[in-house]
Image (cartoon, rainbow, N blue to C red; front, top):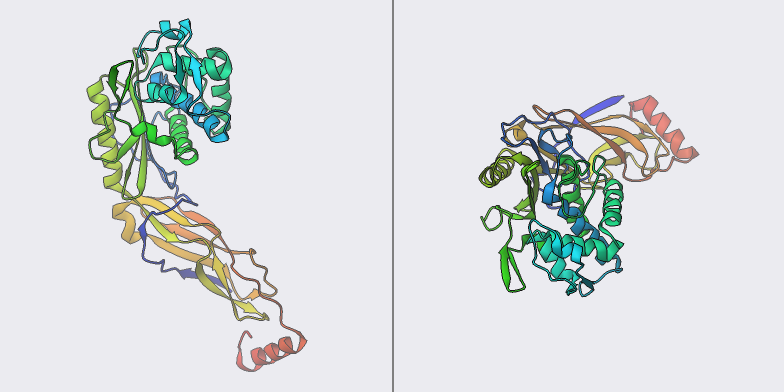
Amino acid sequence: MKSSRKVSAPALCLLIGLLSAVMCTSVVALPTKAKQALVVDYSTGRTLLAKNADTPMHPASMTKMMTAFMVFDRLKSGTLSLETKFRVSKRAWKKGGSRMFLKVNDAVSVEDLIRGIIVQSGNDASIVIAEGISGSEENFAREMTEKALEIGMKNTTFKNASGWPDEEHLTTARDLATLIDTTIREFPDFYRYYAEADFKYANINQKNRNPLLGLGIGADGLKTGHTEVAGYGLAASAVRKNRRIIVVVNGLQSKRDRARESRYLLNWAYRTFDTYRLFVAGETVADASVWLGAANTVPLILERDLFVTIKKRARKQLRVVAKFTEPITSPVRRGDRLGVLVVNAPGENKMELPLIAGASVAELGRMGRLSALINHLLWGKSQ
């Protein structure tokens, strides 16, 4: 007999953990001045807004997030330390654009170079790191591209470490969001550098170019970018009440537009959507009857925590239904797939997740089966 049971999920609460499932949806169309834009809920991975998110674009200095990622990766593995020093080449010293104001032949610590890259957006610092790690900026750029592909940045090619204009130096807003997501997950100890407001080197104090920092809106990273070809861009992230949002914009006409648009999209995401926890991994979603089993029922559970990100106004119309066929014939092994959990909300696409047995149920012995069959014939009981 097929069963469809409406599930009364526990009091839905704000996200306090990692996602395990995503409610798919049609992406919201919201007017934005940016040529490329993407807004993503960090915990569920749900895309809240996308505009030309997979269109190749020039990332400018947002490239430096990948340069920093390469450093963080080596720091985490222990092949590099914050105290390691790299010498400044003449090539790095001569590089134009934004600078950390390094001097030729100076030995600079990796930690200072990280701050020079992230806070001061130093092209010179980026080249010093590239040469120090890979021998040349060209080699480093190839390694950046390989690492980008490895972490899921499928449409990215780096030609340098700084974002210096190059026709083949391309990425997408979605790839940059993937980079942000991976950076935060993989390197929580180093992500903090993105929140630093300023950095002083060579007696020159420079402020972080991120216009969202210090506004009291939860922003804690990441990186601006600008060239004539790319326009003004920002890859940003913020946390409010344990909920993180990622925003990527590019192709804007001015610093003012960049600041306004990124803040607008961030506030819109928090105002319009929320993330709810439906079930914890291993929590009983429903009990299914078992035929000729040592136990009368078996709990149906989800393997992972279930969170959904939906529009706030759709919360009351959220429907969760467990579908399975019962009675389930014994024996039952823990982990057997026995049904599906269907999640529906207005304006959202249906989501289905497997329901599995949360316990093993042995088959009754000969006498137990005989007794169960007699009860079934006499009284209509399944066991």
